[in-house]
Image (cartoon, rainbow, N blue to C red):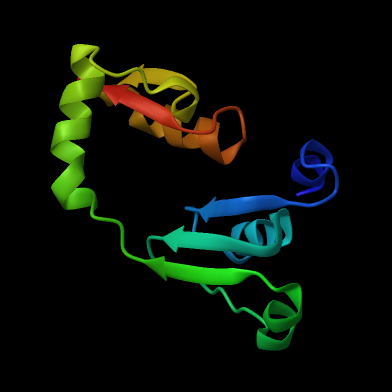
Length: 119
């Protein structure tokens, strides 16, 4: 959140996605948004509690719900694997499917943000 504030001249971001589902990720997202900004979260939060009074005085909106993964994923996988779209910074490590454990380990150890598993 410090880096986001630096990049935005101390203001914070207009919109911040929270896609991890942990208390630390939610806190970081809320503190990275500017007053009047919005945090959007997808997926299922795990042991996340938001202080209502802190949220109220931050002037940050919070919206969330499940992502339509089942509907969108097949098309996105096809587009990435065919080269129609470049996932760019979303995936910073590509491994074959049989190395899924290494991909998870790399993300856990913060050596990768997201791992693209290929057939």
